[in-house]
Length: 162
Image 1 (cartoon, rainbow, N blue to C red):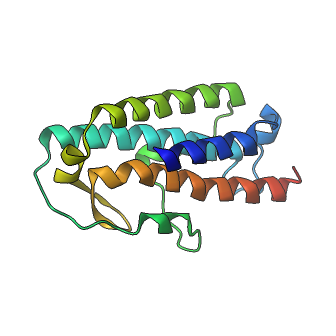
Image 2: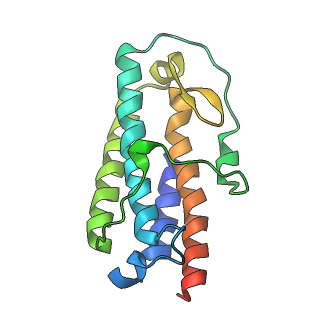
């Protein structure tokens, strides 16, 4: 959870001073607003948790090698957001988004602390770029994924003059 906590702290540093108007503005029609990035992050975190829990219950045992998930932060490779984690065009407040992000992060922490590494290493789930990943790697992947989108938030802030 270390990378996840570091990423979340940096996320709050990047967005904590922004207004609701700031986060809902898009730099262009084909780019996400900061609100959309934040929505994507809580949808992804919650979705990954549900997937890991389901795989632990019903997935088959499979031994897979660790993947270089730290490469997730490289934004030169574009990845289409999965349907379940695609943000809406609707406006939201920063407080609403923080509450949702805090809720998914708490759920992730509780899950990570109550599940053994051995259980997580026995089963896997495919990632669209890295292929089959053991469930243990999915937990820090969430943190690297967040760091990737923090860079995106920095770019959006720059484009919007924030």
